Image (cartoon, rainbow over all chains, first blue to last red; front, top):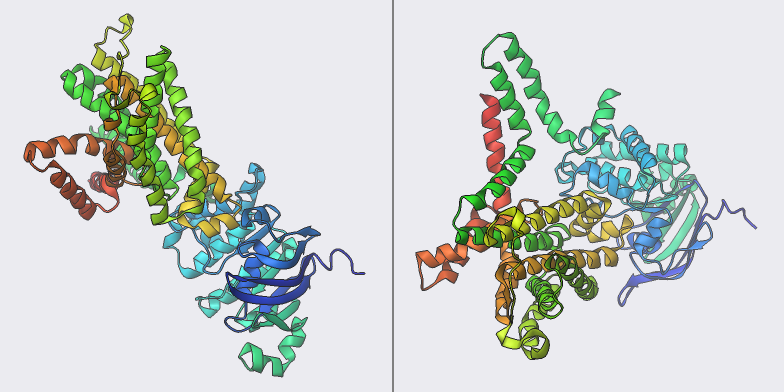
Length: 243
Length: 363
C-alpha cells in the first residue's frame, strides 16, 4: 500500500478519443504529490489527448483521480475548480485582452481578492517581463512572452496540478530553457505537481522525476527520468535524438 | 518596488501613465513665467482627462438640447436614446460575449407589448411598466439562451432569426390579447405639472434617464468579474472553460441581459410612441439593430449611441437623397462605414480623438 502522496494523481485504464476516433487505449500512470511527470512520444501518440482527458476537455473512460477525487465526467470548469490548471496547446491566450486581464482570468474561480493580488505579484516575480506589459494587449506579445503569460495565468489558479502541453512549441531554444527553469522553480518552491507533455524530450527529462513514453495511445515505457534518458535504445526509437 | 505598486494597482493606471509626460512638462512652462502657463496647464489636463470631460459635455448638451429644438427633432433624439438602450444590450451579446442574434427586435417587441398591455389592461403606473417589461424580456432571453448554449455562428443566427420571423404572425394571431393587426393605442405619459415641460420634452428626459441608467449598468457589468468571463468566452471558449468559466451559464446570462436591455428599450418605445402593432416590429428591425451595433462599434461603450444615431437618422436622410431607394442608400452607407472604419464609428472616433490628443500635446 503506497502513501496518499505517492498516488496524488492516478490514471487507470484511460480510454479517450474524438467521436469515432479512439486515441488512447488504456493508459495507466500515477504521479506523486509535488512531482514533475513527463509524457513523451512522437506526433499523434495521444499526448495532448491525455492532458485534455485529464482536464475534462475530452470525454474519457476509465478512472482519473486527483487526491482521491474522480475527475472523469466533469466539465473543464469543474475540474478547474478542483485546482487543475491547464496550459493548452497553442497557449489559449485571450489575444484582445490585456496581460493583466488574462492573468486575472486565471484566478477566475477564486474569491479571495487579497490573495489573488498577492499571487499577481508572485507571478510578476517569476516573469518580470509581464509586469512591464500589464496594460498591453496580450496579442502584441511575442511567442515566448505569450507562453510565459499562459504559464503565469495557470499559476493564478494556485493549482494543485499543473498540466503543460508542449510549452516549447515554436519557441527559441534559449526561451524554452528559461521557461523550463521557471517550471522547475515553481515545482520546487511551491510543491506544485506538474504533468508536462513534450516533444523536446531532453528538456522535459531534465526537470521530471518520472517519465512515460506514449506511442499510438499506449504507454510503451515508464520509469525514472534519468533511466529513460540513459537508455540509448529508447532515445533512438521513441525520442528521436541521440544521447 | 514603488513601480511594482503602481503598475499592479488598478485599471486606471494606463491613462495616468500616459499623463505623466504632460505633467512633467507643465512645471517647466510655469518656471519660464509665461502668462499663459495656467491656460496651458488647464489644456494639458483637459487633453489627458478628455473622456470624463467629453462625457460631461455630452450629458450637458443632452439636457440642453430639448429646449432648443423643435418637438419633431426632440422626438427623433428620444428615439436615438431608445435605440441606444436596445443596442447596449445587443452590444453585450455580440460585442462582448461574441454571440450573434438576428432576433433582438423580438425582445424589443416583447418589452413594448408588455408595457402596452400593462398600461392598456390594468392601468399600471407607467414607471412600473419598465422593470416588469425588462424582467419579462430577461426571462424570455434566458429561454433563448438555452439553445444558444449548443449552437454556434450561423446556426445560432438562424435560430434567433426564426424568432424574429414568427413574432409578427404570432402577435396578429392572438388578437384578443394583442389587439391583432390593429395594435394597441395608449395615452402617453403626461409630464408632471411641477416640471413645466412639454410632452415631447418629458418623454425625452424619461428616455435619457433610462439610457444613462442602462449605460451605467452595462459599464459596471462589464468591469466586473462577469465582464471578464464574457470576454473570455468571446475570445477563446476552450481556454475560458479551462479557466473555470461555466460556458452554459455565462452564454445564457448574456442572452438574458441583452434581452433585458431590449425589453427596457421596447417599454420606453411604447411610452414615446403611444402605439404598438405587429408591423412596428418587422424582421428588418432585428437586422437593422444588428447593423446598427456593427456600424456603431462592437464592444465599445460609445458604439450603441453612435449606432442609435445611425439607425435613426440615416434612413430619413437617405429618403431625402432619393425617395425611390432609401434602402439602397442605407446599405451603401453601411458598406462605406465598414470600409473606412472596420471597427465601427466608435473605432473611427477613438482614432480621431487619439490624433487630436497627440497634436495638442505636441504643441
